[in-house]
Image 1 (tube, rainbow, N blue to C red):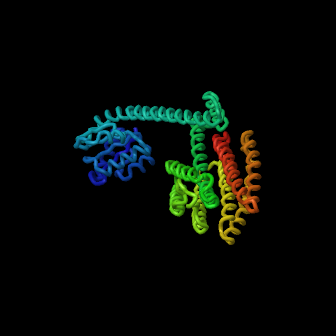
Image 2: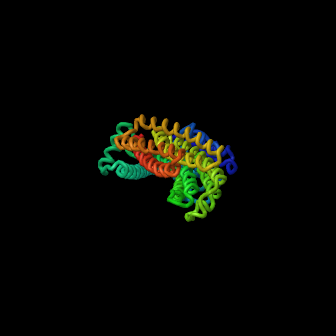
Image 3: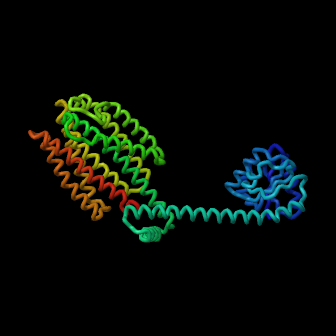
Length: 439
C-alpha cells in the first residue's frame, strides 16, 4: 500500500512527519514521502499514492484548502491523524474524502485497521459518485433530446417518432450520441434566432425613417408602419438582452440599445402614436438628423449580427444573415427614394446616388441566395415571389422620381412592405431549415 504523509506547514515540524514515515516503512506500509501541505497536490500527482495521511495537531486553513484542491484535482482517501480537536465542519471534510479521524498519538495498529476500511470505502464512494454523474448525464441528455424533438416537430412538421428518428440518424452519421446532436440542434436554433433578431434591428432602423418620411410626405394622410416598427424594435432588443450573449456581442447589444434610445429622443413628437394633418411629419432638417442617427443604429446592429454569426461557429448561419440583410435593403431603398423627394437638392442627390448602390447590393445578394445550396422547394418559391415584388418596387422607385410622384410613393410604401414580408418568410425558412438545425 503506497502512502503519502502530509504535515501542516506551521503546526508540525517536518522532522516529525519524516519520523512517522520511517515508522510506517518499518511496519511494511510502504510510505512514499513526507511533504508539507502546500506541496500536497503536486506530490500526489507525481507519486500517485493510494491514500494520504494528514499528520497535524491542528487542521488549519491552509491544510483545509489543500484538501479541497486535492478532492477536485486528484481525489484520494484521506486519514487525519494526531488532531485532538474534534472537527466542526464534518460535511466539508467528507467532501474532501476524509475517510477516518484518529486523534491522539499515532498507533500503527489502529492506523492499519483504519486504512483497511478507508480504501474500500473510498472506492465504493467513488463508484457511487460515478453512477450518480452518469445518471445525471442521462437525465440531462434526455432533456436535450426532448427539447430538440420539440424544435424539429414545430419547424419541420414532424411527428415525435419521426423527429427522434431524424436525431438518431444524424447521431449515427456524425458518430455522436443522440444527446450531443440534440444539444447541437438547440444551440443552432438559439444562434439562428439571435442572428435573425439582430438582423431585424438593421431593417427596423431603416423602416423607422421610411415611416417618418411617409408622414412628412403624406401630411397626416394614410397609414404608416411606425408604431409597429417601434414595438418590434423594442421587443427584439428585449429578447436579445434576455439571451446569454458573450463578448463582444454583449457590448455591441448595449451600444445598439443606446443608439436606439438616442434615435427615439431625436424623433420626439413626430414618432408619437397620434398625429394630425396640421402637425404633419418632421422637417427636412429633422429628417436629416434622424436619418443620421438611424445609420448609427444600423451600423451597431450590423456589427452585432456579424458578431453573433461568428460566435456561433456555424457557417450555415451566413445565409440567415444574408437573407435578413435583404429585409433591410428593401426598407433602405424605399427610405432613400422618399428622402430624395423631400430633402434639399444636395442631400436629395446624395440619397438618390445611395439608392443606386442599394439596388446593386440587393441584386448581388439576391443572386447569391438563388444559388445557395440550402434551397428547398418552399424557399425557391418564396425567392421567385420576391423577384416579382422587387421589380414592382423598382417601378415605384422610377415613378416616385418622375411626374407621378404621389402614386410612386404609394407604390414604394406598398411594395417595400410586401417585399419585406416575403423576406421575413424566407429568413424564417432559412432559420428553421434542416441544414441550419442539424449543421
